[in-house]
Length: 68
Image (cartoon, rainbow, N blue to C red; front, side, top):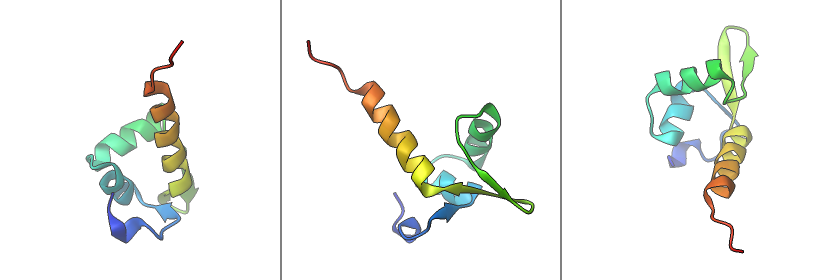
């Protein structure tokens, strides 16, 4: 994850794409499908970094095998 984004609370689509190392269109597609929560501020789309961090944590939990 890019260190210049560490202190930012709201990320643009492009910054979120750098955070995940994907193309910005991938982020836009996830926004349209409802997989990424966002805020609309004027014409700008801003994604709270805590939403992205929570999304990662949730996915890691789903990927972790459960021992019986």
